[in-house]
Amino acid sequence: MPVRKIPKNYLFVTGAYASKKNKSMDGFESLLEKDYYMLLDFDSTVKSFDVQPVKIPVPGAAKKYVPDVLVKFHPDPVTGEIRRNELAEVKTTADLTRNAEKYAPKFASAQQYAKDHEWDFRIVTEKEIRGPRLSNLKFLRAYRNVQVTNDQKNTVLDFVRTADGSSSSTKILESLAPSDDDKLKWLPVLWSMVVTSVEVQG
Image 1 (cartoon, one colour):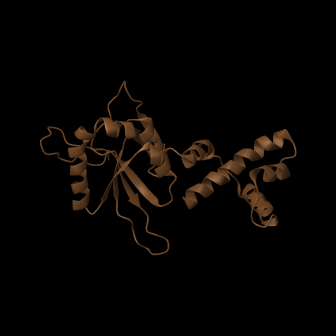
Image 2: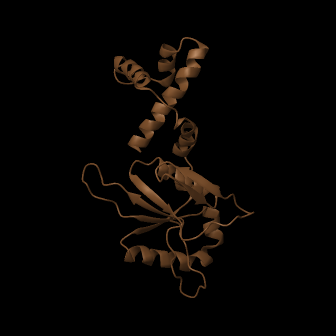
Image 3: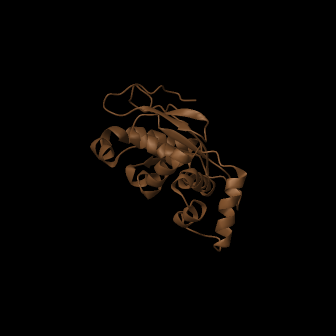
């Protein structure tokens, strides 16, 4: 449950991200935050993430500091170890440089708060967020809720098996869909299976 309500902001884009993992609408204060939530939502190692999770006192400051998100992880499938919760702040590198002095006491307090709770504190920038994976997820997300029948899934998997376990989407589509109408039917099925695979693999 967020400890702070995200206000409307005329300088930055605000809104809500529909998280399948959290089964909720998670507020964001910038498009960079929204992009980070998408990465978390598709990351199979992430169990859940809490937006605007805690208020942290900052020495000398009237207002408490609220980091952007607290990330919780699944146990490692091999070792069973559970990665420490990660308290994260999402900022652009330009913002960090421009406001380094202002942010320093907030980040120091967050670092100590995380340490006291046996968490990690992390600052995440566009360098970690905006890459090929994010671009691919933005494309695939449109197919996330496509309903694929077992017969359709088995048809695709049978074709892949006959191709020694791997094949391109183009070859699969050409085999399953000789006409344009057939392509319109099978293309959403293929991309839906891809996005499901991405969520499982992380």
